[in-house]
Length: 489
Ligand code: BG6
Image 1: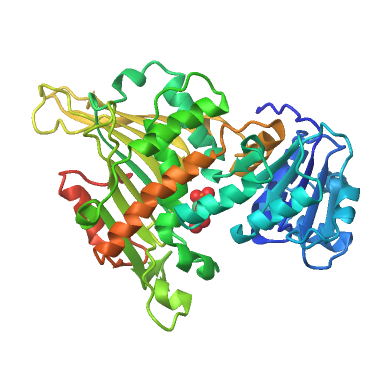
Image 2: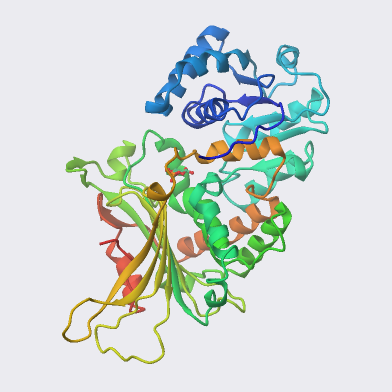
């Protein structure tokens, strides 16, 4: 059984309280923490939005969302209690003249109680909302502000948002979310690396041949065409989620779990990433866009048709990158990153491929075999592939098989959504799983360089049929190095 330590009572205000993120993730996350007894009864949750709505209507919207997200674990009796702490206020949060008194009347006046403002709105509103919070005197001591990704669309816009937020909130009050850091398996990556003595001595260019990080999705645009077409896979997934996974895999052991120690180690990795130049763009990266194809046995539209665009689009829905980290530990070890929409299946893996043993006693069958595969989703597992002897009296046949740690078999529990942990960490004031300003900006600096390289070299996306693993060039990227993308048998 998982243990839940209740957090202290808190107030949370969700701007964008009726939006997609609130309905799919935030309200269900709070409801689940309530069901597990982690949220004290005298806490307060206030949804806000511009639309007029009475509290009964808001609770009905929230109930439907939580019920849908809970599936079989829905607990109607728990909901009846939970909804008592759920409120709604109509407000234009960018306007200091709005109904802030109405909002304040819902909040508790205890000065040392954590007061969280969750900005589940479009990022272009972040600075105005923060300024309004400052103007109406809601930004003091125990207030915290949570910013969803994307923080900007490039370095300059990210800096503008960070500067605007910093006019009102100190860095210790700012929680920049990357929900991948809240995933159980991603946190386990740190435990695996730093709570076991086994891996650390091998974890460098001495013993590792290369690393692969794949986040493959099988879905397409899912009604987000407007946002996605302005963003693309590099900004939507690589700048944040994949680079965070790369940092956790490559960083030096932090001195302790203090938030700044971890973040300081991660930023060193980002700063060591070798920039991709115009001359390297086609050699080190692949840019793809899905065309019509087959998904789950059914024909599906291509990206441009899905957009209903009258003209074509140059937005990439797939990226593969051969990244290099220029530091003592990793020089010479490529990190191959790959992500895309409408790929053959949904799976996220980190594969650590070890080098061959120096002397081959066993002939051809003795391949490039020791690998550690960390499956982040959907069927969370850690597999360490080792060579073993195939049983039998004749000959000596060697086979590669995994020591297999499946989460589902080892822990019979409901998997908490990433937002559940992250929201509780905001209440606790624990910043270690949130991105520091300089981290976000370092990631943008590298990504901006890559976008410039694509533009300067005129590299527009290559198409791939929906339901496949990206353009042929993605396989070639590996093939040129005599390697291939790992695929589960
Ligand atoms: C989001 C991206 O940050 O992550 C989406 O904007 C993507 O495009 C999603 O689908 C993937 O998250 P998960 O948790 O489903 O792997």
